[in-house]
Structure formats: C-alpha cells, structure tokens
Length: 444
Image 1 (cartoon, rainbow, N blue to C red):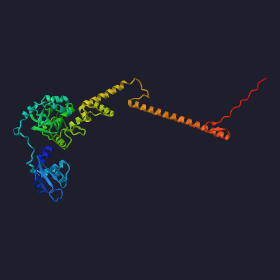
Image 2 (image 1 turned 45 degrees about the vertical axis):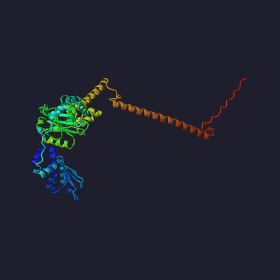
Image 3 (image 1 turned 30 degrees about the horizontal axis):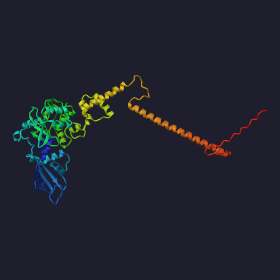
Image 4 (image 1 turned 180 degrees about the vertical axis):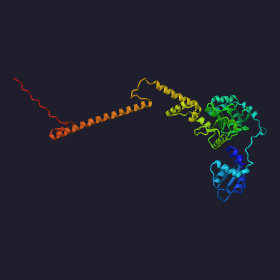
C-alpha cells in the first residue's frame, strides 16, 4: 500500500489520507477510546490530561476532521499526525502516515468518476438546452474578468461558452471536450458569485489539442478562467491546459514532447502540491513557475494591470539593451513580467527618443558649456539660479558695508569736532562756520 501511495501525485495522496476513518486509525495506533456523541465521536485528548473527554472527530462529506478543545487544535489527519509526531512538512507527515496506515488504507482509494449511466442527467442534452440561452451575460462576465474580446467572441461563436440558468442564478458554462471533440463535462462559474460546479466527468480543458503533442513548451492552470487569462497575457502563442482543480488528472504522455512546462497554478497549498507533482512526473523536463508577481492566479494578475506597469527611464534602457541581445522575446517579456505588446511599445519609445536626440544634434564638436542631455540642461539651469542668488547676496552685503562705512565716517567727524571744540549737531554733524566775505574797497 505504501508503494501505491508513492505512485500517486502528492495532491491526490493528501486527499486520499483525509478520507481515512479517524476513529479506527486513532484507536489502533494511539490507543484512544471513543464514544458516540451526536453525529461524531469523543475521546480523551491525546495532547494532555483533561477531566472530561474533549477530543471530537466527525466525518464531513468524504473527509474526517478533528477538534481538540483542551488545546484548541483542529483539522484533518495531516494536521493531527503533524502535531502528535511533532513533524513539520507535508512530505515527512505523509511518510509517517505510510508507516502507520500501511494496508489499513486499502478501503480508501481515489474516487472513480461516475459513469454516464449512473448520472441523473445527460450532458449533451443539457448542453443543447443551455446553448439556446442568450450568451450576452457570459460575454460581459468574461470581458469583466479581462479576457481578450476577440477570444471571447470566438468562444461564443464556437459554442464553447453557453449560458446556464439554474435556480434563478446565471452561470457561465464552458463546454469541456477531449482531443476527439467529444463533450466530457460542463464547467459552470456563477456570474454574480463565487459558486462553481461541474456537470459530467471532470476532464482537463484545452483549445490546443492539435498543438500540444508537437509543442516545445506548454502551460498548466487550475481553472478555465486562468487558462483564458494566460491566453490573453501571452497573446495566445503558448498552448496549455486547465486542470479544473489542482490534481493532475491527465495522461503524462500528453506533454511528453515539451521540453519546458510552465506552471501557472495558484500560489496556495494545493497549487504548490500540484507543482511538486509536476516536477516528479517530468524529472527530465524544465518545470518552471509563471511569474505571478505575488498575485494569487493568472486572472488576478491580468486584472491588476501590472503587466502594463510603468518603468523608470533606467529600467527602460536596460530592457531595450536586453531586448537587442535576446533571441526569445516571449521569454524576455515573461522575465520582466510585462505583456509583450507593452514591451514592444517600450522598445519603440526608446528608439524614438534615441532618434530624436540624434536628430537634434548639430555637426561638429559641441561647446563645453552646452548641456548634453535634458538632465544636464536642468542641472545647468539650477546652477545659474544658484549663481544669481549668490550675486544678489553679495550685492546686499556690499550695500550694507557701504552704509556702515558712511556711519563710521560720520562718528569720526563728530569725535574730531568735539575734541577741537567745534560746534556740532548729533543729527546733522559738524556745524560749518559762516564765511564772512570782505567788502572790496572801491577805487576812487
């Protein structure tokens, strides 16, 4: 049984262990004694002494969960074994579970997909009924999520997007087909909410079945909206698939021809586990993560507009130089986290600035005092302003010095007049004696 779990992807293995009966598991491996309590079971806490039983387990759907009120801990069997064995890391916990569970997990297996005969509905009949509805509400929904307008119109024209009205709610319904164009399931997304459900046998979605076997690189997303977001971000150049979840439910040979696989899975626990599974599935291929720039998924990145972010002049020049040396422009745009059309616009902008700068130059050697660039010109203007300010200060200082010297001269004259006994006035200064003109004698 341990070998069986090693062959399973990590995401499937975790989901499988969560379905283990906790009452039987804890009774056999940890000696707990349970009693029936309502819809669940109760026992003494394995984390410490409690006067009354405070450790509860119950089954919620296919999963078993626990809650310990004495310590406040709770969660699934993964969390429980991690706390009891003091283990950190999902890998270490899974290895310990393999040792403990062994053959006792044989009753727990990956849930098989329901066959067509076990369903209470026919997917093809539902699809034809949905296609009779007006798809305009789906058109507006997809455009509000940032999906390329031409791509949206193509999806509606090809019948891959239909409108499902269910219990008074509108759903954007995607027709999921396999490589032979056979309808497999209908993936429904609530337009005015977050509800999702799948009608039929869940399969991977793609519009690139013909290109995938011969592609050198391909991307993988969790949902169809993320798949369409990648098509919008990468201008439909790279083929890919959508898992309709975070479990690798496709044939590994589908991407056997690729040398590079781009993981655009969500940046959460499930997406990380699926990425690890990809690395294990394709050890001889380059498996890289798409730069989501700290956003949750490709659609959130698309709606954020960060792919059209503004670069500083230094960043534009660096991008332009790298652009000239690069042979793979798509990879360059991905490394910079830019939309390719936006990257080309930046390159054209830099080229126009270079041409404009060269055209404005005159032949011959440029004068030493002439600025070379706009920043130099602004710096020269600032220097001239500073010089003008300094000249104004020097002029004011000269005027003040002149007035002060005049005042000192006046004081010196007053002191000299006082010592010489000459009359003086403190306001007007030394009083001048009236000159007496001698009368000339007339000649007779």
